[in-house]
Image (tube, rainbow, N blue to C red; front, side, top):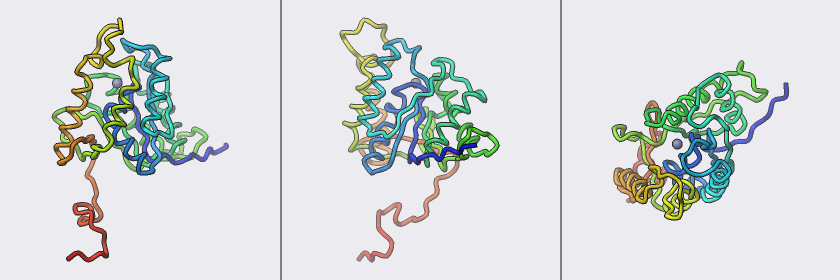
Length: 249
Ligand SMILES: [Zn+2]
């Protein structure tokens, strides 16, 4: 057996459709890339069931958005849009990607969502993150389990575990979202309208980011859920930004 030794990506985000990650975690990915971390996105489907746009156009849009966010990696699993299923075969596809990129942190959809693909993607990624650590699931790669799994696109009744300040990355985040021209408001388009193509859609997205920003006293924020409890090792450093060993008067 040849063991493929994977590279290391710091954060790998899985969205059901191209544009899901940009809408809910794009600012965080742009910020982490600016801090020097290696980031990537894996789209679970090609969005072929989308009311607007074509697979080819959406592929081009995803590539452009990846550039805006400074991603190192963007892949597409090619699962069926509108029919994302959790099966041994689909889990194996995700495990192969996890073992290839060995991300320290994985982001994916929160499990309570109106869109069935988002629900199933959440479960698929969560199960694969666990199974990727099992040596007897043989993919010809070294086993690997990411340290942290975080969920984005939280329902209104779920309080975030934490919010990332993305105030300085609004332009980059919006530029990445605007790459998806096939999905957004376009007065010259004859395609049927959708929730995303509504003229106020981007304003609504901004309102969500403003709301989460308000929760942390910042202009814009992105919210995440962590199963379990967030550990803080340096209480003073975390809440004040002070460094240990430095005396403050
Ligand atoms: Zn979606």
